Image (cartoon, each protein chain N blue to C red):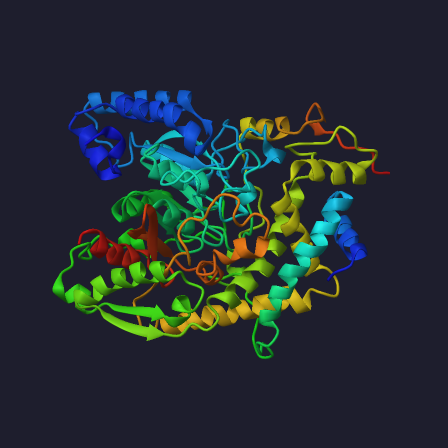
Length: 96
Length: 481
């Protein structure tokens, strides 16, 4: 079983607030699923390359690094979706 | 035949022969949704105004004597993780409860261009994480064949809506069976295309190397029509690609002609019929496959040792890892729910996400963050990616010998609401026959082939990548029997 401290550490990395009850439940649930992963332990992968993408290699996806211009209406809609804003700026809590 | 029973093909016929108008057709479905969906709860948002204004446009095209595309005037439902401009898009999550889509997904752009009528957005497991529809942040959808049972998931509302005749077809998304499994539980056709065959632009991402949009329909023929309309390369999704279907018109299709079916080699992976499957499901699936054998197809047992439990374990490392990264964007700043209580930025993140996400989503974010964290990366994520290579190679080998594979979709028919909610692992296991297809990026279709009591059972046809045309042809043999 993974420890309470470990769950808290992972939750912090994930920027996820959890109640004490959720932490306890998470300990149990995560352990259960992590145990299931033991199925993969005995598979010999010493000479196998990892696959991150099923169809082709990552390099072939890359396009020229050039901005694609979108309509001002679309840009406006994206900004409007933010809850806190000032003009065309999105407001966040102070970080410094 | 009542309007609500029509397939795409038949509705199109009726529209061009002016037996009824698009507005008649659309109103039939809108009224059915109003009257019946309080029992099934398959819709989260009904876009009545949009549907009626679209209908009017197509009606005027028809009365002006224009030729219309096959999907023009056909009412459909869209899974609520696919963006429709200016329509609420929740992905089944409270964190997006009031989010209005800023633009159309590419598949929606294509459907609108064809003239398909959008009736509304369908319920789903939150962020497509679930196999029963019960993880919706709003309410669970019920199975139209038995209201005490789940419709499957995560495209729960899309499958239920088509099964209950609340739409002629629907779009879903499939990351590990989320189109195929609910199609089976609801007794409709569900098709998961080759990874990349349909653009993911405008699909709310869960696991980007696995997610794929596809149709849920009443017939195989309809699934092909919708697939043709929404598929193809898109500059806005660099992983998208052209499928071979686009130039497959010339092949002899859907007719069980002696030579075509006698040349067909069907592989039966023995791992999919091992212990764990409900014997009644196995019997129905095997009798469907027997029909191909009776027509002269060659059936061959094949081995795919990594395709069931090993694939599921691999999936449950790769999917949460990708999801934990994808869901980092829900920070309460750019859009979606935000807390009113954050002390500082860090606290604001913690609370916004705590308040907005449901249990299963939190579980998968945690699992993925764990699998990617320092010290565990090699043991979990990297190992899973290596096993993924083996899974892919397994299929590559088998497709040198056979044209398609046939398997069950789910080990059981639809289960009862609440039955698997307390044990996440038992819920995950209901997708044991699904994950390998996504990990290898293959196309697969789920087709109704029988019932246990009132509960439908589907079988699955898996094809090699970009061989959608073969899957449709083989599926049509069965449909036309």
